[in-house]
Length: 385
Image 1 (cartoon, helix red, strand yellow):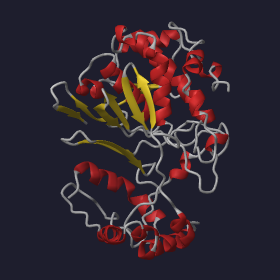
Image 2: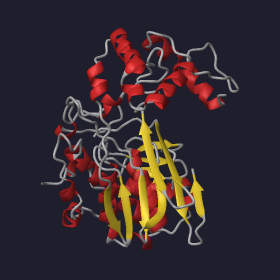
Image 3: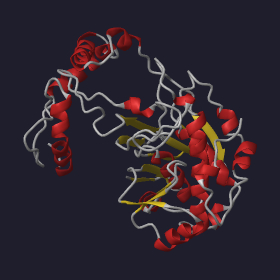
Image 4: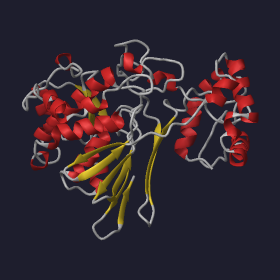
């Protein structure tokens, strides 16, 4: 049974569904409304095949046949060999220490873990806690840190199986302090003056995150995406699921922005078998070697900056999880050279930042949907979405 929001979303999609699908999916209907039942028989059958045969229930057999037939009808290029040869990769998490907390994040080909590492370390020695939440000094410092990290993302980050991403150099403390040499606490450093460190494109925001913790203290942070809203908006005929449009997460040409304005270069260029760069930032924070915070969010390129601010709000400004999530956030990604803010961001701080030389891309009702669980000193859990 679908909600009013889901009905509105499906109604908005109708023209694209009819135009982009060679077999009309169950999502096509004259007028969806709240309370309607959406029956997805094809998807149920696909899930049954996966339940019975595991990986082979998707990458081989009936589901594979349906995918390949969809490709033939739509002029796609995925074949049986591509599906059979695909392998999920297990990777070593990106870990770093921040003032005694161990932070565990997602490694390449997501930029999230490394960006969070860079941003947290660039503020670590600057006593941000004493500046106060939403103070002009704290917001300006965090904005400049975000700008410098995203400049490095555009130049150096991509699939480490194909491009030697200099993770150790980019997270080296001496390097990160050098990145802040041009920082001035009373003025904006234009992005034209900030180059990647010596040695982007943005994704859609239609991502899903969930944070889980059980009574034994096992913690899981999961972020998954189709990229744009409903991916490519093409459903595999007879299989019931949407195909993604993740190719937009590659850099098609150095310096050319993707549909969300971020740029990239050779590190994230298209190559066969290569995984595209993402901003997903599912994150665990350990305190005394035990899970303390589980957090993540959708939001495209705003994901790392939202997680950065949420963690600073808790670890430095001693805010509750609810305030850390709900208080207005801000975002800078180097290019375009503009600050994005959420509704309710303090007008006096905005005006002071404008006088320092910052330009604004207008206000947004919200960036992402942060999901957080925090373990309180008494062992109880605080969960906020």
